[in-house]
Image 1 (tube, rainbow, N blue to C red):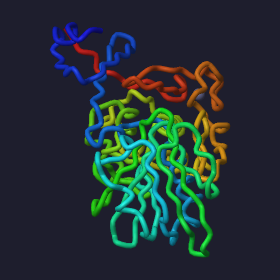
Image 2 (tube, rainbow, N blue to C red):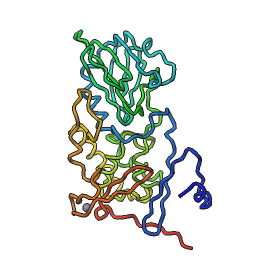
Image 3 (cartoon, rainbow, N blue to C red):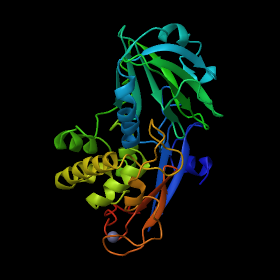
Image 4 (cartoon, rainbow, N blue to C red):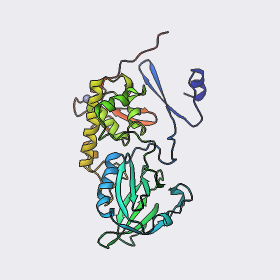
Length: 325
Ligand SMILES: [Zn+2]
């Protein structure tokens, strides 16, 4: 459908919006996807998601916590935000006091209470390397560190597609634009988030401002576990199903963390190891294959420009209010 046709239908569209349509029976769904507001480059991306970022942090943290930054090489200055920041001056000789995950962001706290974050975008890899290790193509940042035992190592940030960023935060906690964490949200709080929107539940789960850390894979997997159709309007999900979805989100994220995330293409942890949870996906990337629960073929639709997989039998379509003429 063109912008003109949408305008005739009474839908306003700005030039920055992308549009996708889904037809279900007699009803046409229109989804406007607006750009992620801040900062550019940290928009919603599919991979890595919370379990992968958590695995990177868990593999990185034991060695990096307490280490002192003794060298900083920025190989591509436009990968660093805010533009023009002298990261070398900011980081050099400071000790890392903690590394933690918030949503899909990796936040480093320094001994002077300043912070920086790394967002891996779609193809980012943050790995620990030996001193002087080869800098592969698309390596944008190299930090040289000395750990608390005096041993040197390097962190290499490599990102071929460059949707990720290295962001100097100064005093900012780095949480702008992030909703509650899905692993700690209470069922009641989760239901309040659902009630706050009429958008399809799949789109809501991907919205980092509503719930931080979920992406395409784990949203699809959680909806399958809770037996909820991805197009169900969020505010039409009753309390019982909402609480079941909250449990499903936590369950699928915990299992994925246990299996060290999903590797579809690029993702590896900070030690260069791939994840194993992709072998356990029930619906994601399984379109046309039989549902593990009922044998029905897994279906695929495009929602908001994103591939969405579900079982048409286990996840019944919502009762749609068809407009009367
Ligand atoms: Zn099924």
